[in-house]
Image (tube, rainbow, N blue to C red; front, side):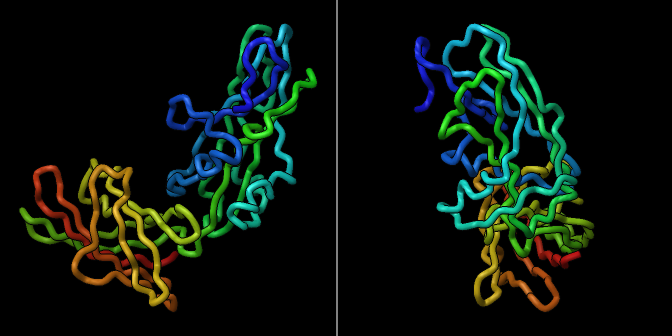
Length: 267
C-alpha cells in the first residue's frame, strides 16, 4: 500500500482526484487516470493535484514541483510508447512551491494546460513529482502524476456538416466548425454528436475507430447521457481526403429518434 501508519517513517506521495473521491489516482497503477482527454476546442484545462505526507512529521516541510525527463520512460514496459516531453507552450504551473506545516498532511498545486497548443496526434507526457527540504523519501509507487496524451493519427479539428432527422419534425442541415475528435487511445476516438440544434446535449458523446478496410465502427460511450448506436448505413473513412462519413442515432428521453448523417473533413 506504500502508506505508512503513524509511528513509522514518513514518506511523500502525490495524489490527483479530478472527479473527487478517495482514489489516489497517481503513479503507474493509475496511469490512465491522468490522461488529458479534454476537448481541445476548449482552450484551457486546470488540473489540481496534491503533495501529501504519509506519517507524522513534527516540522514544516517545503516542497518544490519537479518534472524529471527520465520519468518519460516509466510506463514504456506497459504501453511501449515513447513519450515526448510536453512542450512548454502547452502548460504552465500555477504554483510550484508550497510548505506543509507541522501537523498538516498535504499541499495543493495546480497546472494549467493549453489544450489548443497540444498536437493530439503525438504522444506527450508531463511527469510531475515534488522534492522536499527535509529529506523525506518519495513513495515508490505513488510518487508521480503522469499527465499525458496518447497520440491518435485521426485526432484533431475537423469541419462537420450533417443532416439531422427527427421523428417529430422535418430533417435539417447544419455546419459546425471546428469539431474536435479527441483520442481515447491510439485507435479509439471520442466526439460529441451534432450539438447545434440542441442547447443541452453536451453529454451526448460516442466512441469510434477505423478498421483495416476503412469502415468505421461506432460504439456507445459508457459515460454519455444517452446511448448512441450506428445507423443502418455503413460509416467509412477516406484516407485520401481525410474525411469521415458517420451514420449514427439515439433516442431522446421522450423515445423519439435523433438520426445523424455526418461528414467530417480534417482541417
